[in-house]
Image (cartoon, rainbow, N blue to C red; front, side):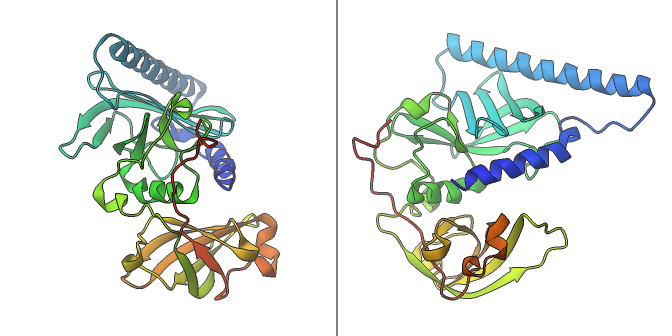
Length: 302
């Protein structure tokens, strides 16, 4: 699956951003550098202690439905763990090919709509090596997911495209640990605006225009195209959703960024040799599908 490429890139990003995990330290004499390392280690131990307190709270008191330990990742380069309890709060870690990249802890503040605000003690960059700070508990049969508010349309897409419900622990969305062995039935319980994005029949979408983006930071391993599509919000498309290309480019995805009633605009990424092969370049002949969720057969159940 293409999400494995995402995790590989995340691992490379982590190598470049390893110092993010804790407040930046100046490049000082040996003594000050040792103090910075000691501060990092102390905070890591504090995060571990908070996770232990969360586990204890969840084991001895009647826990709310969303309490527990959650995970997303590939099992190798990127592994994010999030532990939640009403009183003991949140403990979060991101681990990968070089060890622990970042860790944080804080409070959990339930909201009236059922979502959770996570107030972290350390600076938190969600676009880099950080953690979601506004999440929505999503029940699906016997499973519980913890989805970032901003990723709800992407989760609906993952259901339509068959990425969820996943059969193993690895995946792109936080799921309670062990729930890969639990059954799903019906559809996931999402907020109304995103519930309507789960489709019973696939939507086939064409391309109005396709233009390559020439980024100043582009490299030889990735290229990007901006596409305008011939369907929009009236057809059940929303910003944040993914669509999958068919035909020659089968499997490549576009992430939608804007929608009007009749049009959508998004970015499609190609990787490695795909960038140099003319047949892989998107054009007005490229087609996409939303996919559709038709439930699980007995053979599909975990």
